[in-house]
Length: 133
Length: 133
DNA sequence: GTACTAAGTAATAATTATTATTATTTAACT
DNA sequence: AGTTAAATAATAATAATTATTACTTAGTAC
Image (cartoon, rainbow over all chains, first blue to last red; front, side, top):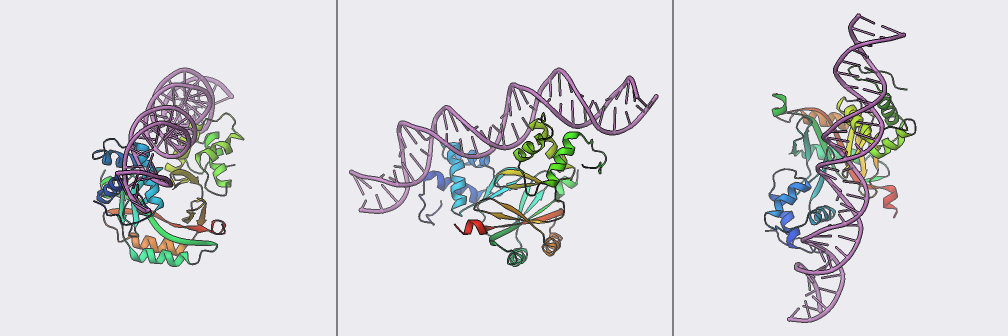
C-alpha cells in the first residue's frame, strides 16, 4: 500500500489504488486498463474518477502520461527514460540511457526562449516478434 | 500543386489537397485543422476521408503523425527533427539538431531485439509567453 | 479516347474516448 | 467527534474516431 508521501494531496482510496496499480503494472496501461485494474478492488469506482485522477496525478508529478498513436497511456516510472515503440504491433518498452538524457539536456541548453524541464526520446522501429513474421 | 512523386499511390484530389495543405501549413495541425483547411478548396470533402487519408499518408511515409497531450497532429516535415512542447499552453515547435539525432541513432545501435528506424526527442518545458504570466 | 476494375469518397451511423454536471460522500483538520 | 472543502459516483453530454455502404473516380488495358 502507498504511503502518503506528498502532502497537499488528499489520499483517497481511489487515488491510492490507481497509484498502486500503476506502480505494479509492468508496462504502459491505457485509461481502460487502469479502470479494469482498479475495479477489481474498488468495484464501484467510476471511469470519470479514473480519468480525473490520472490527470490529477500526472499534474502533481506522481505519474507520467505517454502518448502513443493517439492513445493516452500512463506510467509510474519517474526515472528519466526513453521509449522503444514498435510501429508494427504498437508495443512500448522503457529504455534507460542516462547518457542520452544528459546529451539531450545539454542540447536543450541551446534552445532560446524556452526553459526545458525534461526530455525523452522515442525510438521507432520493428520489434523482434514483428520481424519474424 | 503536388506532383505524383510516389507511385503505388492513387493521387486523388483529396489526397493532393491534404498533402498540399500540410506542406504549406507552418505547424502541427490537428485532424480538425486539416479538415477546415482543405474544405476551402474541396467543399464537399468528408471528415472521414480526411481521417483515412491522414492515416494512409502517414502509413506511406509521406507525412508524420505526432501525438501531443492525447491529440493527433500531422506534419509534412520529413527532415529528422525534434519537438519543443510547452506544458503550459501546449504549443509545439520543431527543433533541428543533427547532432542529437546522430547521438540517438548511435544509442539505438545498442538496443537488442529491436531494429530502430527513426528517433525523435521531445523537450518539455515552459515557453517564453507562458513564463511571463 | 473508351471501357474496366480496384480503390477511394461522401454521407451517415456507430463506436469509443473524454469531459461536464450534480447530489452525495469522505479525508484531513480542528 | 464535528466541520468543510474537495472528491466521488452516476449519468449526461460532447468530442474523436471508425465502420458501413452505395456511388464515383484514377489508372490501366484495350
